[in-house]
Length: 158
Image (cartoon, rainbow, N blue to C red; front, side, top):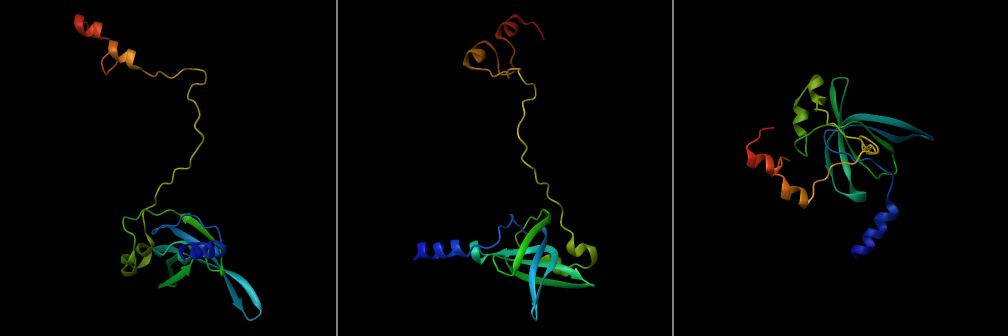
């Protein structure tokens, strides 16, 4: 039964979404159908909670519109979700940010920004120069600071 559920979920997978965590500022493009016309509507806000996993994952996004707080629960794998873009990574110390509901003005959307390190290819600092790597023979002649035992025994300072 579990394999059958996994098979169905694999076929239902929708839009490829980035990693979204509570505190992130996101822009979600939603398909809106009005009569016979279809258009995209952007919903910008702060993720205050996420639930579920896989195809059942939903996020709650909160924004302030004309001084009124608006929350929307969005199923990530819905066919009405066109794209999800993370505008800013927020640093949150809890998984549910419901305390933002009590705040007003700019403070209602303030979450510290989290620095995300982009992985860059590692380059050698000095090409062609060998990096020193001590081995067992080195430590049989030197202490842990790299000072030869002969200096220590003779009382010679560095």
